Length: 335
Ligand code: MLT
Image 1 (cartoon, rainbow, N blue to C red):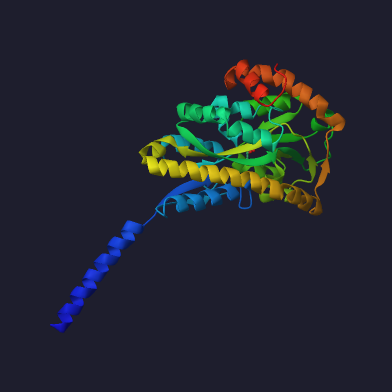
Image 2 (image 1 turned 180 degrees about the horizontal axis):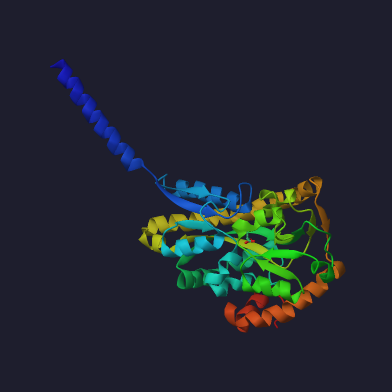
């Protein structure tokens, strides 16, 4: 009798445990990231997951798969659009082929500081681009990481002039605006997925690439690149996108938690960049990288890019008026 009672207690305890563990099991979303640990994308992702858990009492969390483990950045846009991937953190230039209107953030020399990047992404322009990507690609931007200016690196020689640039082959993302910019400079752009870039640099298939200091460091490009040119043609904005189908499946409370976690990670990203970029640049010099500025304050680079690349892409980014609205917001002269 005593034995039977103990058995019954054990059974009901097991049931209680099973129930409680299933009712507390968190939903884990997969979050892809193109860059390695230590990158802005990684810092952003960690903060997003922390905040998502905090705002949903641990019912929702995310698992980060960095370094393109879930595919190239451009592939992750397709996957999230199809609903086979939950989230991805990636450079905006890799969203542009699927939602050309976000190309306005890749137009050379439009965004000239972190503050301008914050103003545009967190204001009416950013809100419009959120709607555009939902419509065009089935993905929703729920946060923005900021990574700094894309600088040019290469393994061959210092590059200070456009003539120097002609001596090297540069990997560029599969992005028409960036390809056209290198062509306008008289360069030799080779479009290639981000996930293939390190190997291509290592094997000498290409001589150089451009990405921000924080990314160069996180990806260990200093081991395969020596020279850096401080061009400032694109300030890298790296959104967190999520499958729109998944977003629409959530209750208003969970949607709100996702948006709030994205906002907190966005704020953290700006702080991360401000706190780390200068130190990382210095470390790269200590590791042997040689940094140059473009000759004559980059004037020739700016003139060539803006006069030929901007007009060619007015239509794809949503019209010249849109660019003028942005220039007005930034306190610049309209074109
Ligand atoms: C690229 O160059 O394709 C991207 O900017 C890489 C990145 O996400 O850091």
